[in-house]
Image 1 (cartoon, one colour):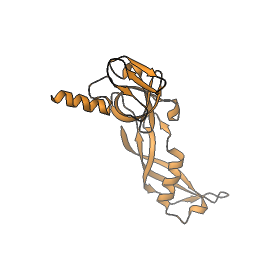
Image 2 (cartoon, rainbow, N blue to C red):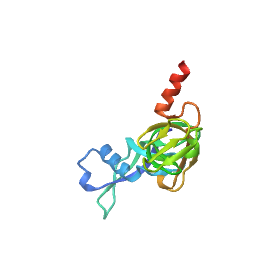
Image 3 (tube, rainbow, N blue to C red):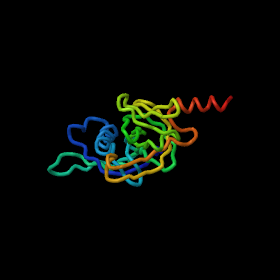
Image 4 (cartoon, one colour):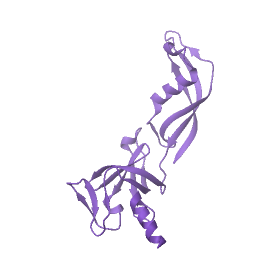
Length: 185
């Protein structure tokens, strides 16, 4: 789930940037500092969208930079349990598929892809169903439900998202369309 949140912080503006608009410079510095960082309550910071307010800058002796206390709006992504998400399959491995959902990757285990038995086709680099023509390849777009969320550490690398596609309306987009056509008949 994406959410806009208001945050406050102090931003150090170096003298070389004094001639630039404060809001743009502050947003650029905050984005460099926070984009991709994980906060357990808020989620993963996607971007600072705008500076809402700031005080008069304070120059620190011996530094020369100006320090501004700013209030800013930031966009976060926080995966929620049972949320339905769309994503792209970015990697196929023997035990499942990694799906990029926004700024983080989730894993669909082979047991959670379809009700059919799934095997790994090493030559093709795909997951293939045994009794139906279904297959899952890298770059396929899928719809999945989040079934497990473990947000740890300060970055997405230590976090784990578990996904399932074994429910109605989930799976590879082509499978969903085929199911809709079948149900119309």
